[in-house]
Length: 464
Ligand SMILES: *[C@@H]1O[C@H](CO)[C@@H](O)[C@H](O)[C@H]1NC(C)=O
Ligand SMILES: *[C@@H]1O[C@H](CO)[C@@H](O)[C@H](O)[C@H]1NC(C)=O
Ligand SMILES: *[C@@H]1O[C@H](CO)[C@@H](O)[C@H](O)[C@H]1NC(C)=O
Image (cartoon, rainbow, N blue to C red; front, side):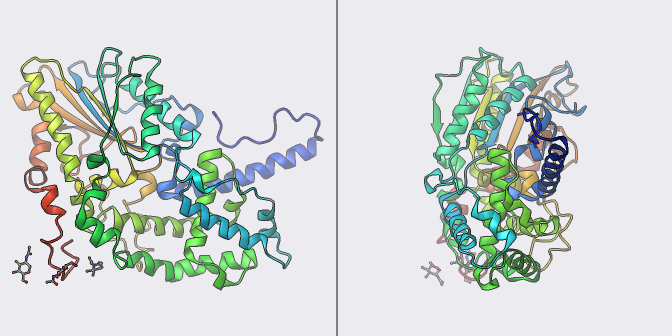
């Protein structure tokens, strides 16, 4: 598991040396090409992409961050709330069917075409009933994340503590929760606690009528995404791939090319191999396809429409409810009833919440016509919500506080790295300051009102 791209070197001493060297250098070339692409896989990125040290040692906590309150003897974590995206998954049924379609197209090629021929021998090993299920690598993502969190917060994850598990009803999330428990099992006795299925919190988007009608099921809501699919950047990629594969341009479209790119990402994430699908793309193509993926995330889950993030205020408020409760218990010297809350959901759970809180917001919206301008955007879903991404709220109790406000402080980690709060640019906040900053959302965002359709005037979506 340690190394990312294993060459065929060990255990093959019978190959002549020059052939061996040739094979190694070919493998390295392909590995280098894939790793050039792997930073652009968007929501289909491996977790290792945002924490590269894990490629060497999956249990490493990475370079120490002096920003942690943790090492200071004065502050002790009281409560930890983790929102965790499921681990690496298989493609969905829809993606698998499209891939099958593309694969058949290439195999039915009659003209000799070297680039297409490599797919004649490629084994279409995905089958539709894998439909988005957690891959074995996804289980490992979760077990190892559990072990790292337990190592980072040994007090909270000590065997006597109580753990509250909740999950989206989706198979991959329930399985992720089980794998996470298994990761904790060697040091704790968490095997028997129930995972509560809670779609109200983990799939709030399904329960928000306004979101479903105005965004999810609205054929025109993704017009920027559709425009980019027809735009000049995508056209150039399509023409190049059509020429490479010797197929008429009319047989290809943005969706098929995106499926080829996703297959490259799946093969790397699930099997840790360099698939021939990767060889169709260079870094420029990858940037275009990443933008296509980010555009969709932006308009469907991010800042594109207000309802995307407003629908998550039910989860946001639940987080603060439990923080409040822990503080009240602490103040009256009672044991903390929920010291560790672990909740398993989706990229679609995390992204809206991060937008609600104001993270990764660019000055201008992502649009079909500003690809170049957005080259250095903050909103890159591969950096924010790869597989196994996690958003963690840690509440600390600090002794020796000079004022009562200083007694309770909060840090937020995204993918195990401290996030700077949008209101202060600092990596730690007094709990009172944080509540004050988000006062409007905490007091005035009511899920049922926000998500109610009848209150909407059907005129403009700027207000969505
Ligand atoms: C669908 O989205 C478009 C574009 O944002 C908007 O103009 C339209 O009003 C929406 N339709 C519905 C039914 O929400
Ligand atoms: C909807 O539009 C009507 C008429 O334009 C206006 O009187 C009403 O206040 C609007 N309702 C909301 C909730 O914005
Ligand atoms: C607004 O849209 C809803 C549902 O699409 C419809 O029932 C209602 O009549 C519309 N109202 C106006 C004023 O257009």
